[in-house]
Image (cartoon, rainbow, N blue to C red):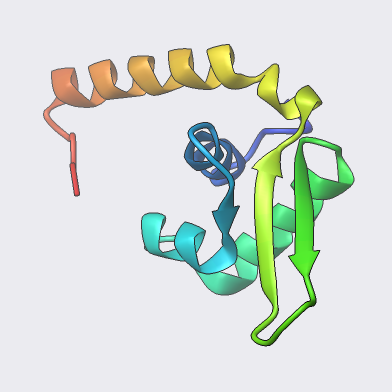
Length: 99
């Protein structure tokens, strides 16, 4: 849990399941997450080997993509189960918000 615990890491990882994403794509997909926290969480996930960061320097503007590593992809079944459980709980409690 030290690697994926906290409020936002699992949310970020969930958004990277389907494909690699640029920083701004993640910001748009997770609007409640502020820039500083997103940046810190991405750095921690990268340092722990769960995601990779690829920077493209060939032409401005700088392009950076984040993706799950092989190690990170091992979390996909767990993330999907947590998501399914969270949706069920939110629906039962009447607190489900879909955007």
